Length: 201
Image (tube, rainbow, N blue to C red; front, side, top):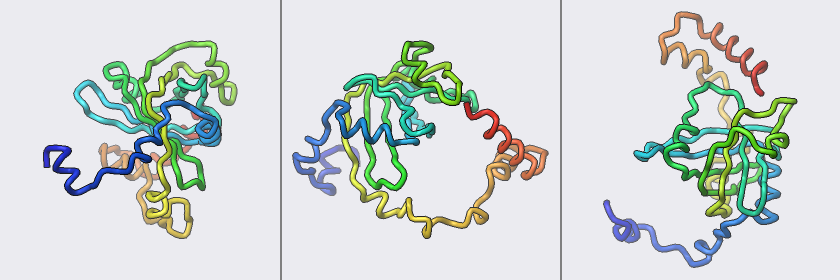
């Protein structure tokens, strides 16, 4: 399959209503969802189209709505790979998916991003007394709600469907096997847990 026409032979055109749901601005409902979202996925790609999706978590309300067309997302301490930021420097197009715990619908935002190292709104991005070093400023070009089907199919918020955490490998075990680290998985996990607790912001 190589053309949209071939694809549309399998997937029929949506109704006009589904195209019209894109309001391309941050209205009162989007503001409410963003204010209650503690977790957002940031999708970026480089100039060659290689994609990356990065999870971003903060207390609900930490993503700032600057006006009807602009959002600000703080950078927090991480692994220093800056994958998303390197991509934005070469290709400003980004996608955001806002999640609210217990809510099956999600808010999708697409736009153009720039990196800023300081601005008056940085004070409003401060969490636990820590002001961010960088922020992503996003000019909203598309904004619309995504229906509940994916969350209903996956039962994501239903604890009864969750696997026993002990049946899954720890990050320490994965890191040891992926990277050939000599330390025990238990020691790696202890170090990771300490780092997560002491260097959140």
